[in-house]
Amino acid sequence: MDAKRTSSLFILVGMILLYMAACDKQVSPGLEDSFELFTGLEAISEAENTTLLINEGSNPNEDGYFRIDISNVMPNAMIDNSSVTGWCLEWNKPIRSSNDTHDGVKAYATGSNDRWKPLNYLFSIENELKAKYPEEGVFTYREMQAVIWTLTGYMGIAPEFDVDRISDRDLPARLRENGTANFDREVVTEISQYVLENYSQSTISVNGIALQTADDEQNIYVVPPSGITTAPVTDITSVSARSGGQIENSGSSEISRKGVCWDTSPNPTTDDNCSDDGTGVDDYTSNISGLTPATMYYVRAYAVNADGTAYGNQRTFTTETADEVDRELSVCGTWSVSQSGGFGITVDTWDISSIPEGATFSMRFQAFTQPDKFQVEYPVGNEVHDTGWRGAQSYLEAMAHLFPGGWSGPGQGQVDDIFQKGQNDTFRVIVTGPEAGTLWNYSIRCDEEAQAI
Image (cartoon, rainbow, N blue to C red; front, side, top):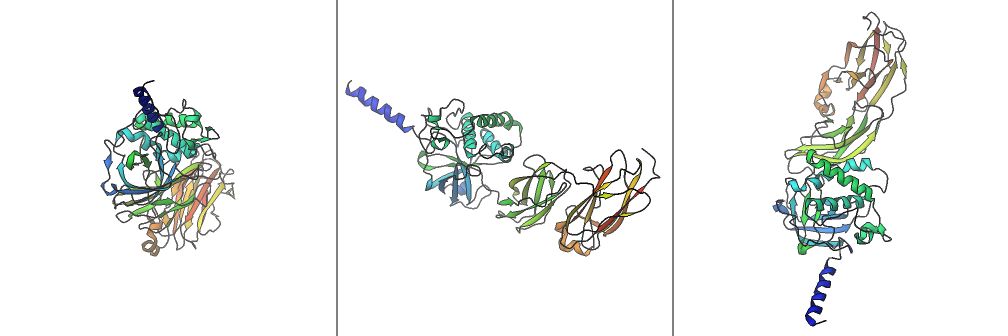
């Protein structure tokens, strides 16, 4: 073999070895050596000289592929100095990620670029995916990272990552354990196909940030934190619950409205059911009401300022089954007095099986001074009347933010002919009080003289 051929052979071998690393260890060689990742993206001028401190994610079920501390960012509406979850964009590139600092990083917003819609859509439904795959170890950062590589290959911003064909030995090190894949290939395929089939027709609520590192190292995708955290859901009944929020960062303007939003579909927004819990950055508690028994709900804190609406992390909860019948009304023409109540939410389910069909039902209520509201459901789960918040007018100015929907009037009142009995033998009364020390009572009367159904 002549010297020229020998030299060419060494060059070829050297080129192959350069491609034998991926995110953190050896992978099969990639064919493309450059991709126009940042073409068409909006450069964030306030983050053109950003510093990243990168570590590997440590919790498979909560962290991303990386945990990243971002610094040297000037004030702007897209990204700030914070700790975030980070993800590899190119499966065949390495990066220093053991408490390593990267300077001179540039940041780009992806929300206005159609090519990045699959990836932004994936993170728009991240909470929905976590709810779909709740078992520990079924949907971890490893599955999520493999989906990202599948999508970036489809999007043309990274080499192809065919999860069904790539061998275990060619996988990046963190996706292997004892020589075999440590993630669920079927889940990755299922999620990737779902995203690609739905992203173009779906609402995309995430504007991810692409980070361009120096020296052609791994480029990274992050979702900046919203600055608001959803409080755990507590006091869950068959028709109500409590949550709230903590606002860590109000952005560049004051918070004009805050609360929680809930729905039976993931990622509820202010177009769904929401509480209104005032203004400012103080922590707050939210009442969630009007729920259906034995039903799973999604809830997110929200905050509104001049720049728009930010949402916190999503939580899920399931309402309890319908309450046992705990009161009975068997005689018409007289008022049946309820038990008195206090702070919180009280649910009374009434048995009216002895009352003939066609009878009508009325209610007297007394909220005394501190406000309460009274809701009636017939059949159970179908609201037929809501008095709104009733109580002393003097509480309105001091605590108006506690009463979403506004003030309805004095605490004492009577509502006639709320519903007419059909085939259902139970109805429900829900009494809500937002402040400790509230007192109330109510009475129910049926009238048999109504025309039969």
